[in-house]
Image (cartoon, rainbow, N blue to C red; front, top):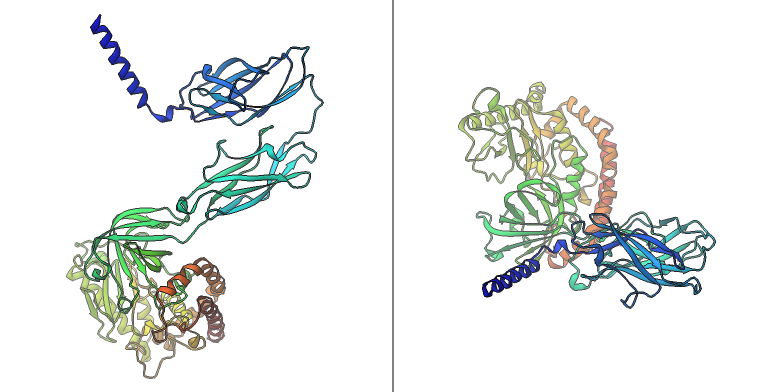
Length: 633
């Protein structure tokens, strides 16, 4: 007997432990009623169906009770029967307990309650009547004045709800704001509701977060519900205000220890600002850039541990944090890349703004940008293998950068005009001698053929080697931007797909001496005949071909006509972008003033708004001037 008692005691303890550790998803969390208002004559009954959430909740019909505002059983109404009509639904039959001789009417606000958990439904208005009242117009539809609200911490807004029919009877206190699942929103509340004329109510919606909770983001689909009838409005989308995304890099080293030569392990955290998915990932960071690395505000390169989507941009490991230190507007790179998307160029780097923190220290406003790499979502050229050394296979793909910094491991200078050519792909450790020699010879032949045009030669051979339309669109972008780096050259990219011609692009690096007001009415990369500071000034391919090849000028004129309508939208694009970044740009300017730097895009001494205004007027003036010139070709 003693052993039996011990066994029973152990079983009870185990059962209690199992019960304690049971899945919390099995608990009743919500009760939604099929109607929020019923009428009952004395001694009669009616039915109301209760839907229990979640669908997996464990309960019994006997646990469902009726309670008044004091939490006790009401005296006039009782639950006569409970019938389970599904796995999570119970049909309740309510009975009026009044005697026929005592028919004093009443209106009670009751709730259907799951007794073990205390979970309660929305109020159920029970109207005890002496006899069926005459029919009264009821609310049949609710139309909202807005379908979207965006909130900062603690903000509020008003929304008007128009009621149909015009003579429906309702009271402001009969409305609630619920999620489409019938629950109250955690961070948004209806804080006031009052009549607005005879056919509408106006309610106040408030973000109830505190400053400490400001990092919490939400996105709700809400409906205004007329509780007595259960009528719902269309959906009102309520979400946190989109804000400037934030990139945080955390490392075990000081920022001053970061160099251009060595990757440093780090963790990257991106707060998408309500616009993009957040991201936390392992990464490596190092410095990047040439002249830009020497300035106070540093640019960086990132290499994620694996390919990942960043701020809505396609998956890849390699990304850049562009400082735009020299550009007070922070708009030059972004505007030129946007311009590139309106041309026929194969690929233009995607980019998004973010505020950057290094080891929790604010670094300013940056442009998170795709690094130019061979990839199906970037420079989409054939991946080279070490066995691709002859025939069609050796012809591509290749990614080249014409740049006087001349700092890649695999590089050469063209034999005719001494172009400094850096091979960006294949990678230095992968490219074979045969591949190196092929692309070197190909560029040499193109350079020689174009140089011959300047001496009266035919351009046919040049266009057999170089893609004419990409050359035209590439030049148009550079010329509208007033950027002279073709003349160095610097950051001038070409790519060559297998079996195809050398093709201009992608675009890169337009933060310095771009869209300068002083250059609004002059040629930058054309009609260069006199001595210039820049080493490739006279012999650069665009200058030679535009001055000496009528077929190229005609194509440029045709392409200009095609892209001009898009170019005319650039000032509006700049307006929209400047409004989004104004606060962040002004904060950046406080940390990184550029007053000591010579001729930075004619921005020095201006406010952000003044610099943006000048940028827009310069672009408009330059497009007008270029149109007047090119139309004469």
